[in-house]
Length: 264
Image (cartoon, rainbow, N blue to C red; front, side):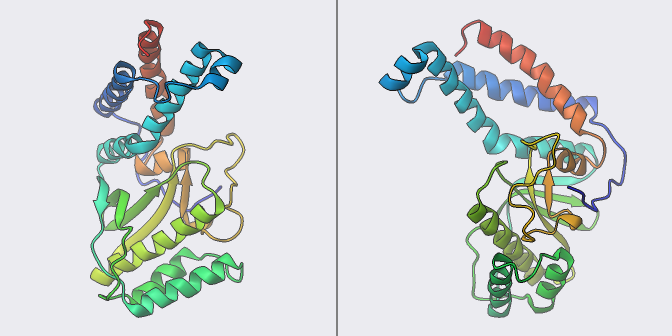
């Protein structure tokens, strides 16, 4: 997947930021190890089919996946963005309302996208919404942004999602990005706004990510979806993805030692 996201400064992650991410990972994982107990105390069919020890391990790994899938990506992104000289905030409460003209445009446009009558054009969407956005009667309920980034005047509102959303989820997230654009431009009409969808890794690597992305719902050429390396390198404004993998490897060595002591 190619995007026109430009990396302004070629950076790697500083030692200070690496240490912060490492400490965050160790704290999260050790906390999970120390406090873990199998939620399902009785699974007679699974225990007999797999063996209780194997099923316990599977249950624990699933619990770790939940931990990684919640807030940790946001926290890591904030550390990396600030390390690159940007501003970042997680769980950002976007202010603003949506007027009826903008609401009608978004609803009609989404209908066109879903029925493959148009293909997404991110710059067109932003400028059309800019023309009509303003205070209105609609309070959009889904106004908490997973990750807010700012580099200079550019404001980015990013929804971090799981790596395999279904088609309806993909459509709902697209609609959310349009409403976020409307909310911000309704408050500040000349704001330099970009809304994006991000995934922390590509489950199909080394093949390109292609789940529901080829139907024209998102503007891939303008970086509306950032996956894996694209996302992390953009957040860090440089070549940070390999550094991040290395931090996870080093943290994993320590976590596995604790697991070997019977921590779970």
